[in-house]
Amino acid sequence: MRILTGSDHGGLSLKKLLVERLRAQGHEVVDVGTDTTTSCDYPDFAVPVARGVAAGEADFGLLVCGTGQGMAMTANRVPGVRAAVVGDTFTAKATRQHNDANVLCLGERVVGPGLAAEILDQFLATAFEGGRHIGRIAKIARVQGA
Ligand code: RB5
Image: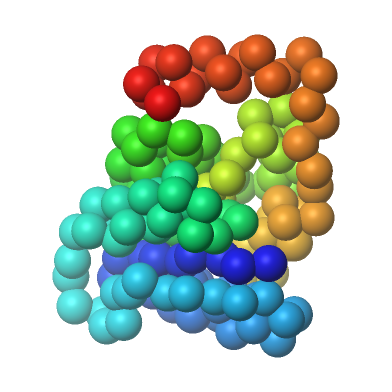
């Protein structure tokens, strides 16, 4: 898969670990930054990842900040994006099956690296169920103006 990633300073360490892991698994990863621990603003990384996913330039987006919240709030403003903050593997699976989430947001200050890796694996391995969920996500798109 092709995955777009981004983080602010608060998510840099976890993002680096996950990017390394994704590449070792054979995925193509494009990282929009940040590359340093200097304090920066999460929207500057959430927007290019979200726009890239919405434009079909990647299968999924992965955004990491301190909590995942600011990344998700920003990414969900982009029409066509369904970004989910996830802190457990049940939700990682359910948000793919039911919400067709296309951007995974993680909080480095919330989940440890082991759990984050399992969440990411589960997210990428789970397909959208379609069916009754199609109309529901279409309603999200309408609110976004997609
Ligand atoms: C940065 O201190 C922190 O606010 C940011 O990483 C994120 O948690 C925001 O949602």
